[in-house]
Image 1 (cartoon, rainbow over the protein chains, first blue to last red):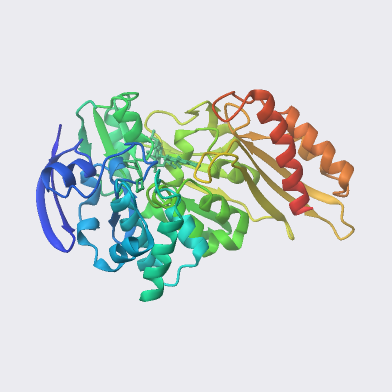
Image 2: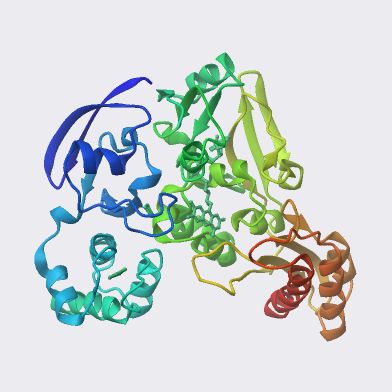
Length: 150
Length: 283
Ligand SMILES: Cc1cc2nc3c(=O)[nH]c(=O)nc-3n(C[C@H](O)[C@H](O)[C@H](O)COP(=O)(O)OP(=O)(O)OC[C@H]3O[C@@H](n4cnc5c(N)ncnc54)[C@H](O)[C@@H]3O)c2cc1C
Ligand code: FES
Ligand code: FES
């Protein structure tokens, strides 16, 4: 019910907006700010479709009120460079694509936090990003390829 | 979701006053991982949500007075990476690392985990085995609550309306103590435990057990201490017969709830198996 002025950066650009207390981050991004690369899948923190980065780490935007990103730096799939995307296309990292933006945002967070991530760390960080299509091998290969290309 | 008013106090005192204003219709929010889901599902419909994110002092992790102190607002991720946590017991760090996925670990906090009181959660089990004591404060004063008195029932704690968890304190371990946390995950690695076991033991120079703690998750309406099993070990060498005997006593102490992870009988049997494995690991 209460309204809140929040200021944060979205993919490097300043955002200054007012949201009702119950506005979810995923809805702010998709419906108010037009960043529809972020998907709403399970809505309970399990599937990873809504993954965004907050100050570089991956979060479920379905489990966050928009007020919680006040003062932070948010990155969505629209803000990623093309290196990972290219690796996903070269390694067969997606089929239907519904999970892909979440996979990319999570993978990018991993390579920022751990540029030399081991294959086991890749598997651990991608664990919460479900994919019904690829069987994960292509995704893991793509992330390893992007890691090795840096 | 019922519309609500959101407050973000800058200090603990302000948060306590705001909570005391309206203890029946206000909730505190830490990471929000449990609260947001409960609110989306209309299982709770608070008129006011009091966000704790600005109260930085509640994030602290350290050993101010000999005890390891874990701030209620510390995330599972921060706790898993923390040097003081690792130094206290590697098994404690790996317990926090065993929670769900990296996303949940970055958002969810220790205090939220304890207050949510789902018996299948990971941290309460190891914290029980490490003799953890929760410290809570209301506008009227501060209280120390040993963890086995904190968990009252399924999703219920003994926290009073108006109380906020500040931290969990862990006393130093006996010299040479060894600890382990075993999470049984037959479905997927990001799941809640089907059952889990934390064991802490110390032995004297001749190999006789001088200290034993066994705690179980997913094995009843609350995380449990297997006290009879612990007593059966003290004064004995941690040999095969003692370990099997303690595992049987631990299984007998369980009161599991059947759910999609298995029947009560299955979980009881697995509690025995995993207690045995945990004890072999630290023996
Ligand atoms: C997809 C998913 C998977 C999960 N898997 C696991 C798992 O494998 N293992 C595991 O252990 N847990 C798991 N969890 C649970 C997770 O650890 C808890 O949701 C989390 O720890 C709660 O912390 P929070 O900071 O998000 O609490 P919130 O959601 O903010 O709060 C939860 C409850 O605690 C109360 N509260 C919060 N902080 C305080 C405080 N300082 N004092 C008093 N009351 C307080 C709130 O009012 C609320 O009732 C999972 C959760 C999700 C969503
Ligand atoms: S939509 Fe957020 S994790 Fe599934
Ligand atoms: S590509 Fe279809 S779900 Fe992952």
